[in-house]
Image (cartoon, rainbow, N blue to C red):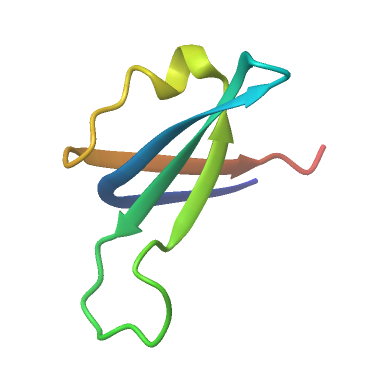
Length: 71
C-alpha cells in the first residue's frame, strides 16, 4: 500500500459545464515547497465533482491524499 499526502494552498476553483449544465470543478493547488521551483505556479490540478469543489475556498490550506492498495 502506498499513501502520499501533499499540503498546499487552494489557488483556483473553476466550475466547468457540459452543455450548460455544471459538470465538475477544476481545483488547482500550489504545493508547499522547501526548494525553488522551475515549473508552473500550480503544482497539481484536480477534476472533482461540483459538490466537492464548491466546498473549497481559494487561499485556504488544502491537503491532498493519494492512496493505492495493491490487492
